Image (cartoon, rainbow, N blue to C red; front, side, top):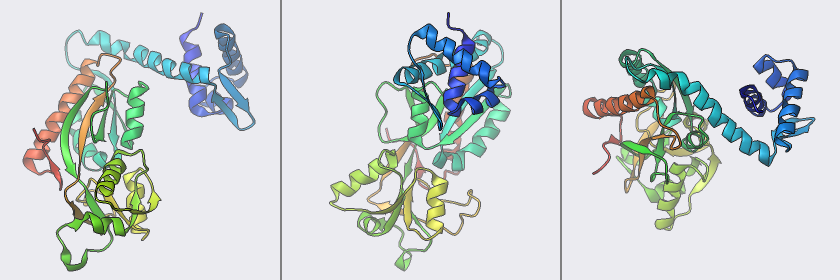
Length: 309
C-alpha cells in the first residue's frame, strides 16, 4: 500500500534533483530515503527515477506520479482549512502567484490589505512570469495567480481585474519629447523582450506581423527585473506593461513611452479548475478585486484601466 510519506519523499527528491539534497531537506538519512524509493518502485512495478552521477530525474511514469502526488499532497494540506470552512472567521493558508510585473506595484498594497482584512489567512506569495504561474496552477501548485493574458486559457476559471497598456522603456527620452512612439520605431530599436511563449511577446509578435515589421530582438528574458537590468546596461530598450518605475528601487532613470497604436494586456486571477477553493482562497480572490477597484478609483498606475465591457 502506498503511503503519504512515499509521495512526500518522492516529490522532495524530484524537487531537489538528487537524493543527497533531498535527504538534507527532508531530514531523512539517505540510505533510508533510497530504500523508501526502492519500495515505492516495487509497489508500483515501474521505475520512477533515472539515476546518474549528476543526480536524479523522473522517468515518464515518475513525471506522471510527481504531478498526481503534488495534487494529493496539496489536498491533504488543505483538509484542515476545508474542515474549518464550515463557519466562523475566515482562516487558513493560501498560496498566491503574482506576475513579476503586477507584483511591482500590487504586492505591497495587497499584502497590507490582506493583513488587515484577513488577519487569520496565512498568505504565501510566489513571483514568476505569467506562463510559469499558469503552469503551477495547472499542476495544483498554487491556489490562485494574478497573471497577464491575451485571452483566457480554455477550462481555467479566471476573473479579469484590469487592462494595462504596453510601454516602450529606455534609458533616454525620445527625440522631441514625444508623448507616444509608433510601432515601426519600436521594431527598429535593439529590443530586450520576453521569450516566444510569453503572452506579452505573443501580443507584440502579432502586432509586428500585422504591420509587416521585423523586430530587432537582442536579448530574451521573462522577468521584469532582468529586462530592466538589461536596459540599464545599455543592451537595448524593452516593452513592458508598466508606465511608472518610481516604486522600483533604482529604476527612476528609465523613461516609459506608450506605444501607438495602443497595445494592451489583461490582468486576471486564475485558479485551479480541478478542486473547489477554500473559503480563505475565495476571500483572497475577492480582496484582490476590491484592492484593484480602489486603485482604479483613487490613483491607478500609469496605463492601468478597467477592462472594457
